[in-house]
Image (cartoon, rainbow, N blue to C red; front, side):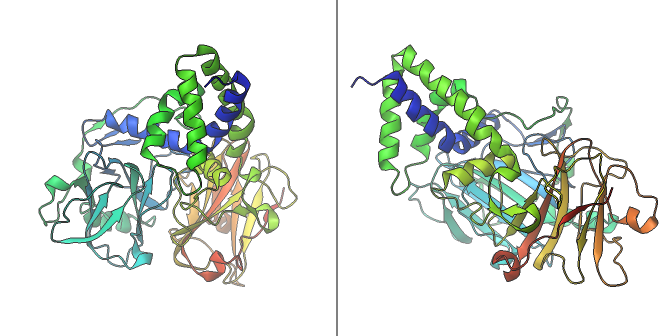
Length: 444
């Protein structure tokens, strides 16, 4: 059927927006498909498909593959290709330590509940694709079925800032592993992550590694849509997109019209969502949050906004996120000013796990500072509470001269910056909105 270039551009603009996170994940998988061993490349983790690699300490501040990293947990990372093989995920005994395994599909929706807050026990967990009908071997604790064959696995294990805890966590980390089902023998495998090869990486850039290109988008889209079958109600949308892709196959003018529309959508629709202030549920004092993270369904706007600004978020009952670009007056946070964030007595985030307040530059990454501190919270054992029980965090670029203020100092990077609150294993007041973060007050 003959269609117009204008119609093809209309469809292309729409699909570029809602499929942007899926193509992002697809290209991350392509990157991992080229990896041949578990190793460290500069600040980054590498692992072949269906395996993962763990860090042994907080993420390096120079990391630029995933925006808004944190220094609250020790990360691991791996991509799965479940059409190649089901995958076994090992969970060692973490004792009383907070832990959660983030495992998401091609849509960045979680299909696994695996963590301390879920009452998960040590053992072996099996990840299978949507069409797998094999036999589950003895000893598998639970099977999780993904809606797509592509997925991402990211263990997150809590660590505090003391040298003692950084040593204590190492034993548990060796028991984390992921491997194809054929290698499962019912016995826990152990990996000494500190002994993996380490090679230099490319110099870090300013912004997140780019994963989505309008010029390549429509060449990759058929594979992406085949791996992520339509959700209920999306069937007609998929048919519309596939019809336009078919028309563009042998028609360069239609293809160029679609690419032009994708570039326009990138500039006008997707890129603005990098700014936290442009989406989310609006809270007091200019904070914002979302409540459907990792369960976006057909909420295309929020899925793409999160994927653009801080992709790979946990479910709300695992971690609740709070975003801030402004001070209490509504002015953009900037290092030329000094700010305070004061939690009243018993007013820090109500959690079963722990909480943190991180700081990012205008590109949503860490920037080196004199005290190597990029977040404050439960992990910091030297924070100073006031006589009335309140806790004030001092957010500024220069070091406070007062000893108490210096203990509570969160160094600000040059230029505009953002604050990012995390409540791990949040209690009901965080989940239902009864508790919200305090204002960011400009003091000078």
